[in-house]
Length: 101
Image 1: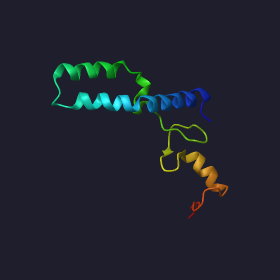
Image 2: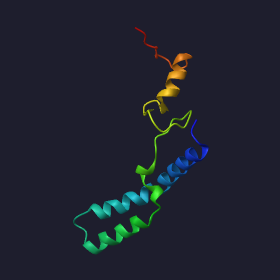
Image 3: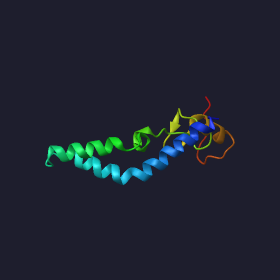
Image 4: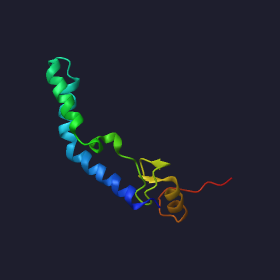
């Protein structure tokens, strides 16, 4: 089980990303548009850098929904390999069969 503070920090980051997504997208469009004047693009870049760092999508860490483990994360299932194995062994994941040879 991961530290509760780490999981909560990640949840706060997710909220910030949702909150600033539209503003960030608009500013990035201005910055990347080569047809705009240089000073306008520079002002947009300054506004973008003034936004909170945690509002960037790359700051979010994929964590297991069950345990909060940050590594060995399956995106499709939103859980780690450890949690998947435990749920699979108890028969709670449909279609998952433990292999043996």
